[in-house]
Length: 133
Image 1 (spheres, rainbow, N blue to C red):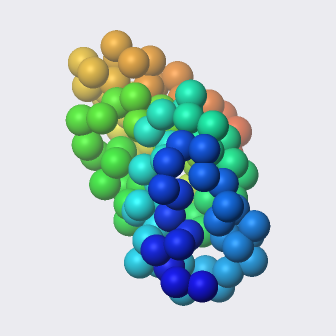
Image 2 (cartoon, rainbow, N blue to C red):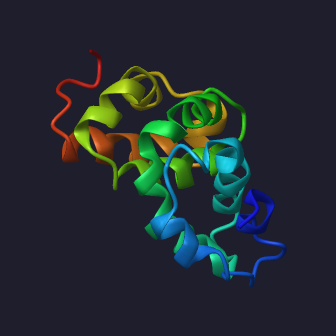
Image 3 (cartoon, rainbow, N blue to C red):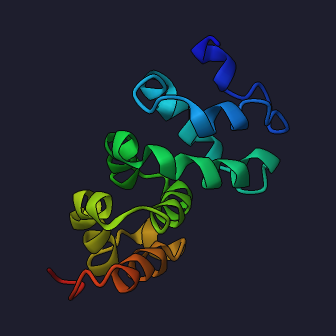
């Protein structure tokens, strides 16, 4: 299968989900950022299916996730933080400083989108300690 075929063509295209559940993690790396884009709109039918399959690629997604958490797209941050709740502690530790920054010193946009709520849920779930660490 060509990698391009693993990228949905529209919000109803879930034909690639089964393949993503079994494909080698390193093979899919070139398109992971394009798959993560589908979390930008949780009303999109495909979004929930990606919540189920993307944690499989958590280590490979970390650079993309850090980029999103440092961006101005506060709604997308919320969705990515919800995804991180399904990660393993080892991976969460990599993004921990940015999660704590959002919880402790959120931007105006993050406050308006209630992004710190999602960050604090991760801190509580993974017992990451004081928000201010």
